[in-house]
Image 1 (cartoon, rainbow, N blue to C red):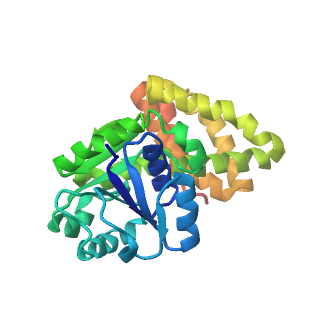
Image 2 (image 1 turned 60 degrees about the vertical axis):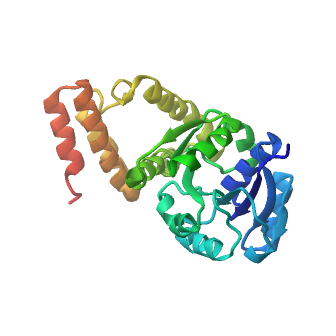
Length: 294
């Protein structure tokens, strides 16, 4: 018995990784791939190992599954075009990969008889080749029609991932959390690299200097909770050291200093919950961090 068919509209890094895994595990058979350019569609089909690269929706055939991997601002338009194409059959599953939006973006496909959902793997797809194996164990957050979610369950199993259902009304807050954990960690690391570079650490050594600290802090926070993982001058209430660091950053790296203030206040709130420092010391630190530079 052949696997159900999959069509992909917008086969970027996330979509091509998922399609390739489903192709290799034989849970889905990729039929066609539509991207903005013919070249990118061909490249995606080569990565997936299956699928006809097409340049227009009219060149696609019917399929049991439709994965929409376009940017958030294009999801509704793509859904409208798909619903109007006549390609959808009652019971087909249409899902998008946005972490910020729900399946309401697919309303026109739902009206056309499709089962609709959103599926967001909480994984960074910077390198699709690496993600083929690294995605194992990740959480896939889903919402939508119950029958669509049921149809997606074996696909999540094929990824060796874990399915989590979410209230669609909370997806934007959920995605903000993902941004903190992924994009803003990269921004924070950028500041750390800038600071140690300004201190004279060569670029060739900076990443390895920070690697164990960054990975160890993240592992401790996830394993033991942020209250037990927080260390450093704020955790112990060392206002003198915080003042010295802030003065130095404002003199050398004023942009980084502004973010040091904001993150320091967040760290102080954690220290208060952890009861790790004298409250008067934390109050002095908070006053220092909250004071605008004169």
